[in-house]
Image (tube, rainbow over all chains, first blue to last red; front, side, top):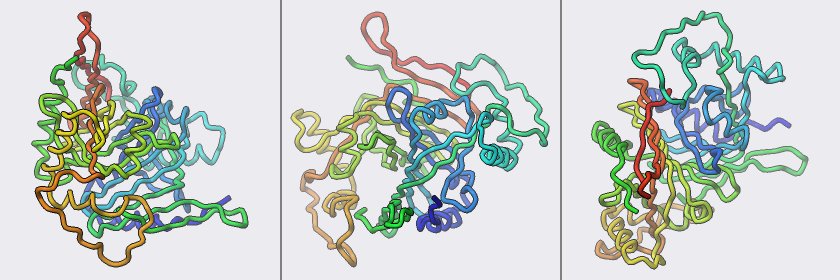
Length: 198
Length: 198
């Protein structure tokens, strides 16, 4: 069932606007559960929201550890700190991995759209050697050419985080808000919010 | 057994120096395992290294969720992104919680030192209401006074992360290094490093 647009989404859009002058304002840290059961944490780039939804899009290399981790334990928490406005969003939810083998046509189209929205330089990365493996090439990487009209390569993967809990903290005003998805009486779901101690 | 000073430590000290002009360069994201088994992630402040070691110090409120989480699952991964130099450190290790009930006198002294090294404003936080609980006070917080010579209050907690794995990524040079603690033949431990694909 559809989830209404979340009250934290407008806050987040405002933070993005007020920090837009900083390149790193679209970077956040995504925590997952590692294959050894320990926490795993890395910087990724915000690629926008899924159309008409609260879901957050992230591009990644299907050969990176996080994809294996998410297939095993499909939950993540984003920690997004805006260095100019001193605001933090902790966004917890479930993660969906969309690679070329996905059987859902709409999801494949979403992955294709994410690919063509990326810059040529971003796309180029997915042609490189497997991330995290020992580096065997010495010297500068070979430049592999990629036609701009070519669709997503095998390694290209779209991650979609579907938030069910958001913790917002403003370090300037010292205000903190907790947003949670709740089931309502008529079987639908809605976002509840409350002020909590910072 | 003592672990020799880590080869990644000098790199990290250099990054701190080259980003020192930015207030947020001492902020990083610490991921832990939540009580529900999902990842948990928040921004915390680097409070230096433990003397003559590679261990990383973090101050926290003993009433915050992360302390309970760490007592249940004592592992964490720091993700530390330097926005000026485009460097990322992922630092994984075990976490030790030091509160006022600790039986180790040296650890209690460490906690006391961390308290007195904090600014009066930082110390003040630990007198506030329990973090994360619903906010019941309206209007400005009551200012509780704290004598500068007063030792750590009950809520003040020191976290110590003992790293055993570090992943360094430089987005300008596109270089990535993996550092791991290895057991050597004579029963000691040493840091190994290798170049890996970004």
